[in-house]
Image 1: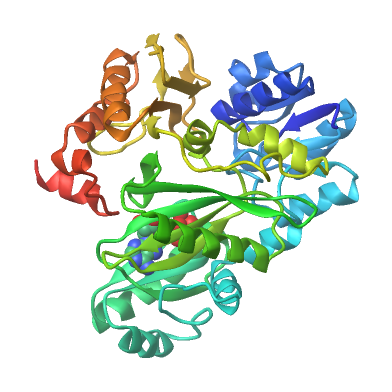
Image 2: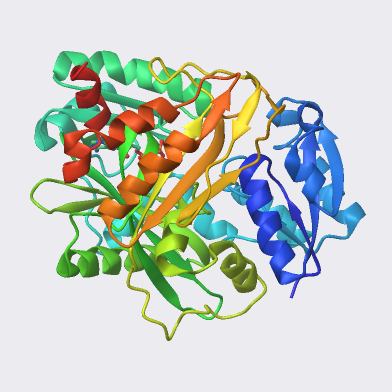
Length: 447
Ligand code: ADP
């Protein structure tokens, strides 16, 4: 087993990894940028190293500074968290060369799934349904128009190198598409340094359903059930729940098998997530695979009673999956609310000093956060300040517990998404489980 793990991340996920290491008796090294000197992950780690100034490119993405920090502190493994370097195949490769374990999949699997257009081809070849669209990146606007004519409008243009809900454009007719093609390429080039785009049919009212998968170095691959992530703003998740209200045993088995086939197609090891769109007729399509731990992993932990980060560490150290012989059917119901420091109406970021911070607690309530009273939310990073996770014996209990926990959660000094979550929990469509990725659009239209 590893003796010391460096966490190449910040915020709540860095603390989450430190917690797992502490329980396993593994020492930890925090890295931080100059903007994060007062951050909790720095205080809770056994050792800490400043890796550069606030821009991420100079610190949390600075591979040579991070590898040096690992070498100086004699860390034998690195956990990348999510975001930053977590899906960077080159980083995983460098660590291999330096004999530092990367707590994640092999570089080849990251590479194959990181190119979304290549990922589509790879999983389609393994027999997994994909959204109808162009088989590869588009060569010209005429090719885009020809594929759209075949698939039928509306269509969505996506950046091959995209992520984080960025680099997508919907086109409703040929004229729309001709204009969107040029802007999508320009945006992709600017955001990801790669102008390649591909095209998919745009599904009108799908649900986003994803499966947590896990592989070990002995070829075992299992799934740990689904998460419903249909409540999104700007294609980014806001509320996630497990299990989904729409999956019956048969659909869960078919989607779970497809998720495992996807992971198997790239020889997947460690934790990963296979994302699908599910249409109103019960047809599902592969969308992408995230080759890392997800923000929303706690809801799977709540319904399986498994610590996914400990599992990641054990698997990276060469151990087999711990749950091979166990029935992993979900127990009860869990919901996660992403609490962002942002305006709940315009979604504009709201950095600044948190003057009051009263955390909710009690049975079935979990708060994953690195915020505290007096903490200054820096403007440089993503706006997530806390993840409130509630568990109940059934969905109704989880919802009422969520209402109570949100009412008891007091954050002042910055604007947060708490009031928005509170509103969603009182919405009749949410309560009835009538969800789709356009839920938020419809909620806004209700005024
Ligand atoms: P990212 O990697 O940027 O998160 P995804 O491919 O995972 O992008 O898509 C994010 C969200 O965009 C999905 O959850 C869904 O709401 C929407 N989306 C993506 N592809 C389609 C599609 N073909 N039809 C309808 N909605 C889509």
